[in-house]
Image 1: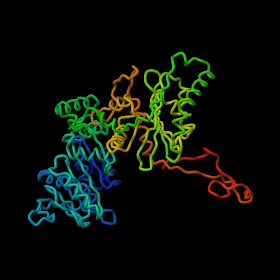
Image 2 (image 1 turned 135 degrees about the horizontal axis):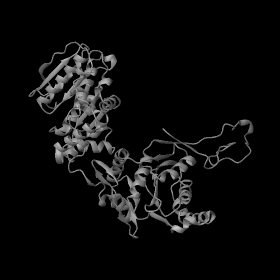
Image 3 (image 1 turned 90 degrees about the horizontal axis):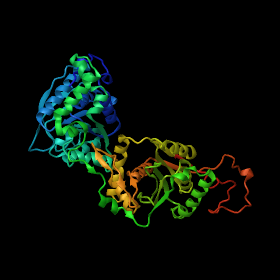
Image 4 (image 1 turned 135 degrees about the vertical axis):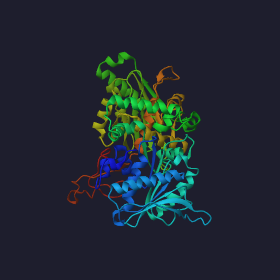
Length: 525
């Protein structure tokens, strides 16, 4: 990889040398106690981490210094890492480092681990181990587990590293993937699904290129950069990995693909009493007079929506998600309630087809005005959906209604927690074959859960495009967004205008002013 010594000499700043993705990773380790990094091969992640290790161990205790423990899976990895650390130390004008080879005592009297060490004037050291320690207890420091997917016992390595955190420090786990069933892939899945509190960084080959990897290679090799040269180099690298390119370069575990939510899992979370409420009008409805359209939709809302809305528990917080459609695709509103046990419930859904923009707004506002303890929602603001999302944010507040242009990165962040809710039995949805089809349409594409460009046929013969799946992931994301609910009373409530002769409130306390029903504020942390 690139030599730091070729880029700066002496009191240079590491941020001036590292590329964007390398900087973001080190920034994450500064913010999170345990960071997982799934990465492309040969993009200089370990090289950058070695520089971070030197800065960490060369610093005084008052400046946050600590020992660093690097855990590879063989002796060559340990030796290579310590050599890179020595290079960084020279570049930072630390005292000329000497590498000490020794036997590391991990508390097992029958075994010692071959290791390499650099000691600093700060009193701290970098120790690179050739295999996993049985224990790091009693120590404090920065643990780096490299190529974690290739360790024979990653859970054992993690156990030793996490025990160290009792004394302070942090853990960074780095690896390319080695299959979807590997312990590292499961660790990543559990983190994204919320089963563990670890932070995840994802760095693909294209991420590295976008941040200037090939430009840096050209700089070090003394060659001119051009977009054409970069494209040819990228194609050559991908071709060299052949069928393994997705796993080796793009963070996609092999065998990881296909249906994201299995049908039996979806069906196990369905309740027959919950309803799918459908509203469809013919194309000519759009051009009827405004008062005719409004009256028609008002009557439908009163007849169809009043009963399920009145049945909602007034003590539960409610949110919503909406996937927008106008002609060919459905527009789906998915209200969601948060139970006392934090189980989420979708009591009904509203599906609209062929409904004009203004009447979609009419239906949406009818629902939202009647959701108890309303904490907001997230809306698909892609394309024509931008109008409806904007007017909803204008009415209910930009803090409560988020207008989203859905991206692969957003799906990667928000589909795994929804999947965890299905797996853990923490969500209930209406029982309907079309909803099963919508959720089954979610596929893992290059490691990211997405709705592919496919259509399914509803039981009534119409086409669907995973519409409920999008509305549901939006609604579930809103329930995880840290909404705070609060009430208020006006500033003009003064004792001198209090009517103590009036009847007491429901709680038996005389009040001279009360916020009218609906005069509520919601905020977001």
